[in-house]
Structures are given as C-alpha cells and as structure tokens.
View (cartoon, rainbow, N blue to C red):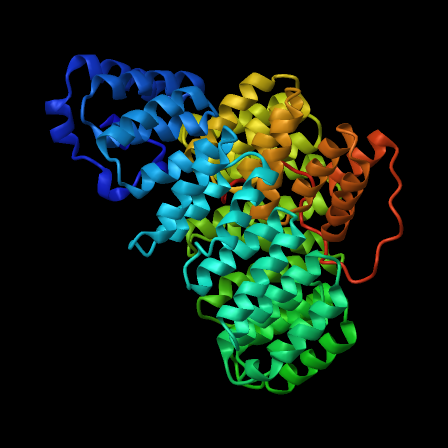
Length: 578
C-alpha cells in the first residue's frame, strides 16, 4: 500500500487506513496522482510530490488523511501555496482536528499572519486534549522567522494562554532560549517561578537561561542551591549533573554524581565527566578507590577500570583489566578494548592480531566479527595508515558483501582522502540494498553538497532523508548547508538555527558561523565559531571556515567539552546499521 511507505513521522497512527480497504475504494482519478506523488516522494522530489499529492487530495472528496498528508508534504517541501490549498481541504473535512490547527498556525507564521497564528495556537493550548501544548510547540517550531516566532510566543505568555503544566513551560522556555531571546526567556522564567514555587526543575531551567545570557557564575550559584535535594533523589541528581554539564562545569557535574548510592553506571558517568574535564588527579583517586574493591571478578567493574586506565593513559594497566574479564557477555567487549590498549602501547601488530582473531572467531556473533573489522580500520586510521584502513574494510566487505556499516565506513574513509567518486560509489551501494537508509542518504547528500557542485542532486538525497526524519538535527543541518550552497542563505540560516536548537554540535555551529559571516553578521558569526571550537577545536568545518575567511579567534578558555572522534566527516543521521 503506497500510503504506508515513507513519511511515517508525518502521519498519526490513528489516521492510517487499512491497505485492502484503500485499494478497493480508491478510484483511478485519485490513485494515479497518489502513485505519482509517492514515487516522487521516494525519489526526494518534494516539489513534485507536493503537486501530485494535492491533485490526489482534490480528487478524493472527503478523504481526511489524504488532505492531511498533502498538507504535510507541501509544508516539508516549503511550498506554502500548495500547503494552503491542501490545508483548506483538510479544514473543510476536519475543522476541529488539532493536527489541522497545528498546520494552520505554521503556515500563518510563515506568511507573517501572526494574529491568525496566535488564534490557532490559543485554540490548541485551550483544548481539553493534554497534547495541545505539544501541538502548539510543533507549530511554532515549523516557523521560519525566529523574530516572528518570538513575537507570537511572547503574545501567548502575555495573554496567559500557556496551561499550568511545568513540562509545557519548560518547553516554551527552552524555545525562547533557542531563539536567542533573553528578554522573552526571562519573562517566561518569571512566570514559571510564580506558578511553580519550590519546583527544582525551575531552578535548572533558570540556570540554563543565565548561562545562555553569559551569566555563568550566577547560573552556577543557582544550581548550588538545589544540590542538597540531589543527595537523596537519583533522578534529581542526574538532572543536576546534566545542568552543570550544560554550563560547562564538568567538575561540579562529577561531584554531584558522587552523591548517594553508587554503582558501576554512576562510577562510569563520573569517570567520563572527570576525563572530559581533564581532571586526572580526581580521576586517579576514583580509579584507586575502584581498584581496591576489584578483588572479586566482576566483569562490568573490570571493564570500567580498564576504560579509566585508558583515560589516565595507562594502557598496560588497562590491558591487565581487560585480560581479567574471563567470561560473560562482557568478554567480547573486553577483547575489543584489549586490542585498543595494545595499540595504545605501540604493540600494533599484536593489536591487529587481536582484532583479526575476533574477525575469524566463529564462536562470537556475526555483528561482533563485523565490528572487529571496523575496529581494526579505526586503529589504522588513527596512525595515518589510510591504505591499511581501506584494505581492512575491503576484507570486511569481502566477508560481508553489501554490509551497510562496512560500506558506510569505507565511504567516509574515501571522503577523508578526497576520493569523492569512490565515497559516492560505496554510499550508493548501501542505497541499492537499502534505499531508505537514512544515514547513507544524509551522508551522500551532505558530501555532494559540501565537496561538489551537484547541489540539486544533493538536495534530493537530503530531502529523502528529511522525509523519513524531519526533526533529525544532522539532517536539518545538511538541509541548511545545501541551501547555503545553492545561494539561499536566509533560508539556510533558518534551518541551521533549528538544527543548532536540536543539537549542540560543532559542525552545525561552524556552518552557522560561515553563513552569518557571508551575510555580514561578523559578531554573531564569531560567537558560533567560538561555540564550535569549545565543542571540538579540530573540527574540519570550523578550521576550513576560519582559514577561508582569515579569521583568528581569541584564546580559548580552559575546560572545554572535548573533541569528537571524527571531526568534520559526513555525519550519519542515525547509526549506519540497518
């Protein structure tokens, strides 16, 4: 059934029709444009899909799901004209549905009809449906102009339209922060404090607001006020640690996680935070504490001790801990980590032999054997052995022909070596066996947009990925980047801001900085470049932009978040496995 293919996030489950009923009832004048629209959709031709789906919705009188689908596809295609026509059909067929009001508010925002958008949003917020505020938030997120969104949100706050639900106020407060509207964020914060006195989550939201306004010291003072609550409440402890992490106070996050009862998971979180903070002294104390209690053969604890030893750059000790994991489900991971420890010791041939032993071990799962090829390739990449990396991945693909993870990894390896033709070939091989592999669609689309001038083709690939996962930050970033490469900088800025709101990623920040710089907004651009550097100073997109524009950033403050593992490579929208 064509209606069941693709665009799953855009339709509600309760509106899906049964395939046999649809096939029997659908007349030819509806079925023909519907099939054409679906084929266009699957090809990433969103403009054509919007046209055909609108034709199908017009022909199918009284069909609510088809009118809804036509509206959503047109909105995704940024075809406001067809979206308005499809919305009119939807409104006539289901005038009170929350989904219809959501789409109506989004289109009104895009058209600059802010009063109409406000009315639709107030109706959603006042509905008895507990999901009403979520629909309203979705509508606001669909707007293009951050200032228009902020004006409408400000009106909702002033008119008291937001319900007394702390989750709703948290969401709209975070939205104001993403919009870089500190005055609006403060206004929302004042309302939250008044409506929910004594609620710890309010304190965390307030700290985030202060951090974004550059008042880091005040943010930390506020977080310190709720620390006593975290000592007896594990959920609050985790939330507080995340809040400290958001203000880049990793040491305090680790201190909070040390409160209360400890287990292997909390020890692991603390170790990761201390390692990222570069506090080797505190990490060493934690390591010694855990090592004293490691007389019993607990595989999980020994794995953790091995990882901490790696953090502390003690690969010989890490190897001993991994060798001490004698059995259980942790044994396989310990063998993989032992290979890494050997590599870190400079015993490269032994490391490769360990990886190859896993590759040839019929007693472990096929996925583990496959991952051992990826591990050996990564180790060779780390030492700059690009030919060796490709040879290993080639052996893996010979053993597992058309495996998407191996092909994806080799595609990225070719891209790093500027062999875009071969990168494209491997990513297309993934798509031959799995045409809807979102990671490959996004990676190939991004690569073509970033490394070639085949922008239209890149856009179609990225649109196919957007169709499957319209709110995936990596895909939204790719979409914004290809719009920029097409010369549509203002549209690109909207999408890249949205991607940044979804995920604080150095690649997204670097892209935002480049677009802002070319638009002449140099101060804003520098701020995003500094954000990218704080997250990953070696990010390729950042370094390329700084070199291209001859930009020198001021010295970085100490205590950044740490670098990513593959800076600047085409990022998967999801894991590259099926």
